[in-house]
Length: 539
Image (cartoon, one colour):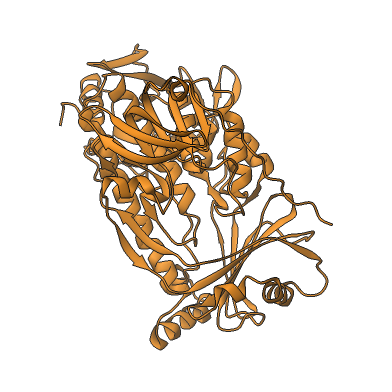
């Protein structure tokens, strides 16, 4: 028998405040210990913010669920100290292939550019991801992770939130200055604040099967339209860790979920795809439908929403967990500045401003992917099949082919925190865009730019030394990093990616997004841009 995953059980422990019967006041309470909630706890701890994490379960997620983690998420986890283990355990890949019937129609490379520390994508079952994040949290004294704690009530006061929490020992009350809801698409917290969660529901049903088998297929994403083994539908194959393969079959809207999840229905479908030469065992089977929808506001007073409870997308393209991780990346530094009194509380409104744009972008791309994969009319089916026929030989048709646009960071090009360009750049790194990584030299050793940028404000300037280590504006402070003084460009890659010449200067936010850029170093302009980036004066 092939080895399958053994799920850990985490111990419930009553908290001291529950035993005393006196509510404690916490800085942040995170609701939900999935990938987004666990990432939030690590992000807060990295910034020196204590957090209590409440989860109503006592183990990791069942089944592979979230599967593909993109380069930007890996960069965030790298900053939080756990990306190396995830990459080592996961399956790195960057090539996707799209088949029409039994012929290859299109092949793409997610990251054709070299010289990045993180791979384009890794595939890793969600239970492995959560287990690794929990292991990292166990090293963080600032995180109090509480299992079998279910939030059953919520009431907001002027400067804090009162939570009712149900445990095996009964219900107790606790308070928090901020609550971060990461409790999934069926969020109880979202219902408690009265938020709306609107969008489009899709009727097609899909089968997920996690299959344990030994196979020599390459680590690539394979997607079929109308394959001979599953006519008039679509199928998807991904390699995961520990000899587990993720297989998705489109079933159509009339499929009976109770019947389709039975092994006697699942196994023949897989056998038709793989042939008789591959022995396999089923690890997990699920039938799902999905929706593309979002919350009306990411902030309700002192309750903030991230991940699936704020936005739900189709699984095509790996946008779910990746988008949630980027929510946390956007939120953590803003909360830190507000909690420390270094930024006005109104800065938190930029979280909804920026991540709302990202949610809309992801919903748009997910809806387009779903409409292409599951055409709703004869006309749309003919259009899709024509695109698939043309894509093999015609470059113009390939951008129209949509088997799931893969997750990419959304730029905040119109964010109120940006200082608009006043100079001309031949670079994609405009204000509101996440920084590109590049190889550098630091103290004679090979290193990477994003690791050097760290998690605070940074002024990156090229070939000109202003004689400063820091620039401050009020309570906000940015470290000055000079290429040629503090770090060296390795092979000109950094300068090329940032379109840099002597004097070129970037102001970079704590989430490693560009806040402003200029052709010359100007301390006064940097100070004004820094004030704007924390939601203060200077606009």
